[in-house]
Length: 84
Image 1 (cartoon, rainbow, N blue to C red):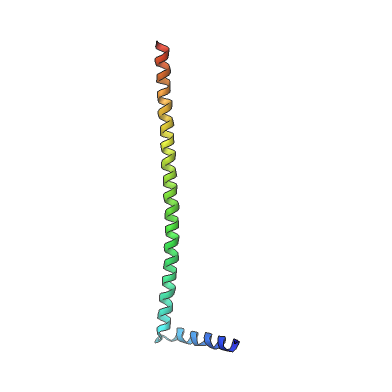
Image 2: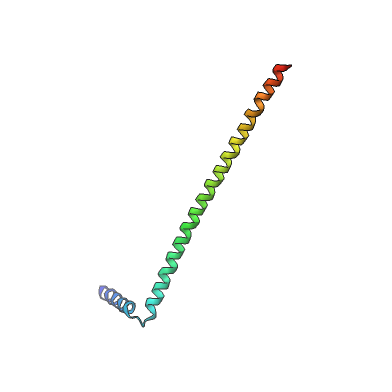
């Protein structure tokens, strides 16, 4: 079994080194496709993480604005009560 495996590797090496062989072109296309898929997945994951951070930031800003509005109206109500 080892003999056949070694012979298969030697044949694969010869085909890859032979510029006339379509195997080297096919192998390059296959590796490029795999790497492109990996990069696309990585970029999609990073984009999703970025979008989540943006949503968290928007939620935080909305919460701060809401609290600020509450604190702005609170003193007015207290002043109005003190006058009467």
